[in-house]
Image 1 (cartoon, one colour):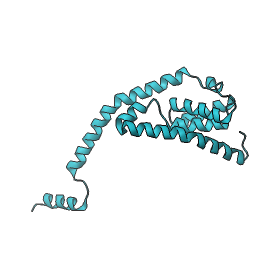
Image 2 (tube, rainbow, N blue to C red):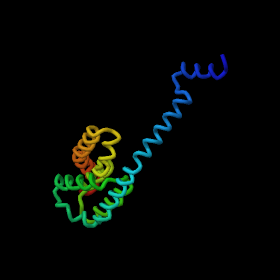
Image 3 (cartoon, one colour):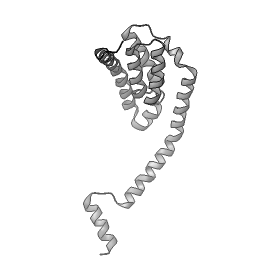
Image 4 (tube, rainbow, N blue to C red):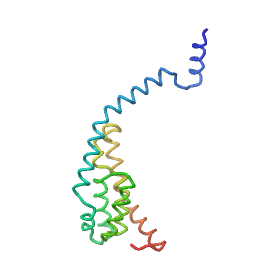
Length: 161
């Protein structure tokens, strides 16, 4: 038995993947990434178009001052204009300056990061339609109680609603 054969048997007994399996997995990952790249580019372009069409100052005029309604409105906006957390901080600061409540800002930030209507087609393609719709729906629904709890904690520790 050659050294190569002994090494392959040792790998097989250890449960670790062999070189051939790793190469096949890497090729599959690269081909899947190449398949997803046009979809990801379209998602990024769509998000950019929506962000360019709706300036942050215009979003401040959408809020009524009623906590539940503001949270629902902000959750809807955050779901459509999804992005990374850093951008949500900047937009939330502008919303706060424009008079939005902590309820609205918390709901906006949660849905901005966890719900993505623009990314839904790509997510459905990679993870399955049922899973993508369920995950986004639950994330949207749970954002309202999270916003309420966040606002209560802010008030509890001396912040203003």
